Image (tube, rainbow, N blue to C red):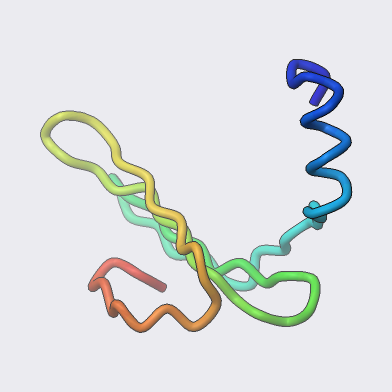
Length: 74
């Protein structure tokens, strides 16, 4: 991420780790899509692309085991 200042990149490197996710499941219809994503250590999070009158909205779960229970989640 060379667009960030070097000092910030160094600080982030010592505190954060980026890993890949794998799609575990996917559901689509004509207007929306949702994905169940598996993390490196086996946890799962969800993401959705939802159609609305104004366009599209995106949702990405920020925690494993979210208890909110949104009806659009995988």
